[in-house]
Length: 255
Image (cartoon, rainbow, N blue to C red):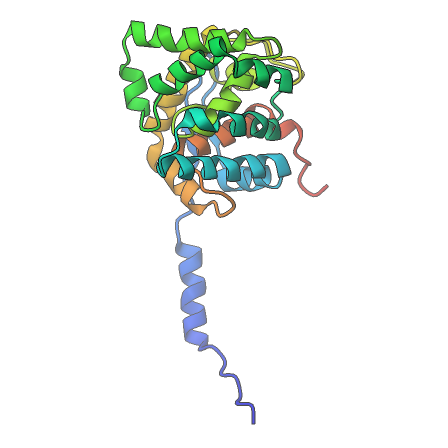
């Protein structure tokens, strides 16, 4: 005979309800922009959840975590380039398969090697911000060489690099560079990137400073996000995309 199911104690339900009401809501994150009003992120959890509903963005985040784990097990990032190249298409990188083929020829491949060596898998934002002029120039030179390959661009390079150095590098779409640095006109399309490679270092500086300044809040947001494993820089990068471009694609509430 099936036993009767005991009802939850009304007192315990009341206590749980009251605790839920009294639990403090996450404080909005307020980040500084170069030449514009501060950027307040009032619903970071909602922004991340909406972005994760996009199949390409979701797949990109899963792939980034796998690539991070594979490197932690000893596989060099350089050997993972052929995997990372087409994965960048999941977030609409415009580099073609011909670009990927060219990137694997000796000259560009050496540039990837230099870039991944300078920006190692344990390089932090503090490390980047402490770099002197010559190491910075070497990084920018490698980015410039790769972006100069036919079909490539700054954003195409970063959409690969962010898969292999997720703790450090953001996706440098024109919209993100406009939003953060006011370094470009506000773009009307994501299909024809115009950002010069020289913006790589200033964007890394801004991104690193904001990640470090708001680390505690971003850790909280990342920990609550259940649809992907994101670290602090990845969390900031995803929120930046929503604020600078993704919101244009987002259905209005109630629609």
